Image (tube, rainbow, N blue to C red):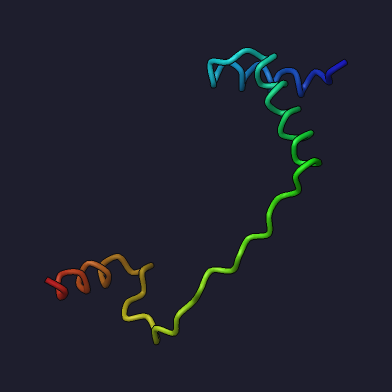
Length: 72
């Protein structure tokens, strides 16, 4: 038995993706069962670099445009 709200979500997603509900259920089961066999790999930390203070507040669109014009 599948809860009605889950079934409704499954039907909507099936229509959105153009796949059968069975395909989606099978994909979800494969992902769930596969993740137990192979735990996700730890992500390595991305490097960071000291670059000083920001030259422009990117939230200030006009200041950003002025800075881009100055670069030309």
